[in-house]
Length: 193
Image 1 (spheres, one colour):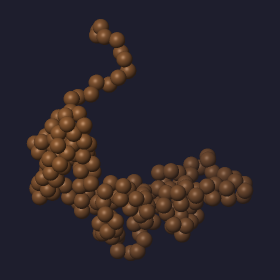
Image 2 (image 1 turned 90 degrees about the vertical axis):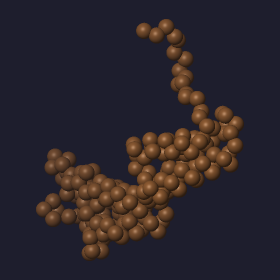
Image 3 (image 1 turned 30 degrees about the vertical axis):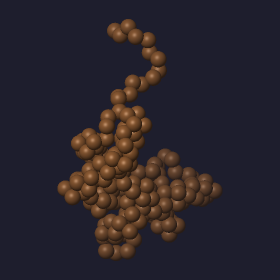
Image 4 (image 1 turned 180 degrees about the vertical axis):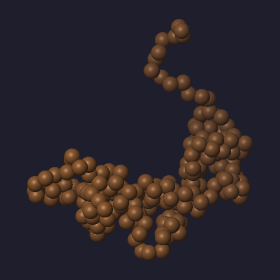
């Protein structure tokens, strides 16, 4: 066993100079593990450049130039593709029962432009307006056991409790970003529908 005393501090690796080779390695390491937008990769690389500047007193201008060169190379080679990233995230989030509003917010948070996010959502629609939103709402209700998906032993029996459960379920759907009409259709549906 180690003879040292635990001080509660986590040992940090030494900062490294933000060279193009180092930044490219960091970007590729990140993209191997996580799907990433251009904005997210830039954010990861900027942290490395800032640390290099702060701890090694390197030139921030050179670090930023190296960052831009690495991002341009990764874009050119197709390692970073915001359109493909947005489409993939839309598919993933829809399958988990996320509303259009929640998907747009997530994509914006991950650095995808509003226009590209809307295009990715439009490219995912089935054709009949609102069918994806309704499917996502049904998935959400099923996963959260709302409305007709409530466990049989957990369903309210008296009229006051039934109304209260319905209101709570509608509120949960609204907080998840679904419109009142979509939420009402899902919550008021029978299990067979």
